[in-house]
Image (cartoon, rainbow, N blue to C red):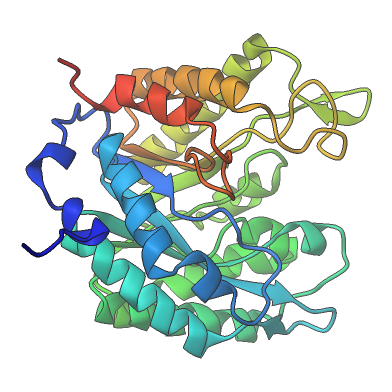
Length: 326
């Protein structure tokens, strides 16, 4: 008798639970490692074994989308460091495996915003435009369902560039990509307002902002209670409600949603406990549902080395939201 492989096993009916369609888009971040790039990293995190494992876990909690990042390091003079050949090969295989299991994909070319905000790096507008269009073509060739032209670009580009770039890149993407094009922009500072003032959200298929709650206490970013968390989530959800109505865009997304700060600065405690993240995410999902959000992409969720190690707190919580229990 031929043994059933791990990959074959996830196709068996017993691994396909009946889902609760709390949101049309129930998305999860595939891998959280995105910074810093080094040669061989795609094979390390998008290899066949780990792909099988993450797809299986995503299906078991009722997700229907996975967020994949193509990531780069920046440079001081506007350039990017990465390996597109390595990325194309590994991501093509990962996307194909996900599609075979009925999962849809959000693809995002990505460079960490922190070092641009801190003025350590700058990013050439032309370099990023070429990068985005390259991956938009890749998304089309690989039947990717959703695409964003970066994450938090309103922090990465200067204020007088970001809004214009968002308006100009959209028609260029549409020339090469036929799927949904979304935004995934930063909310915690007022840069999103500059995009809005110049109508830069106009024409996108979905309005998405990143949901990573924080408040300022004595000049320090912090979240000190679940009440803080809920207040932040409500405020941002109402902002997206406003943008949705203004631009007549019904698709509203939290992309991605996570929790960095908890009872102390990020530098002191960068990774809140899995149980805290599970409780906060539970609250966040309920708030987004009350605002009739189309979907969510959750940042850290899995019992994986780059998520929560062996802890499955968030997975257990997600099953209560997205899986019909007997």
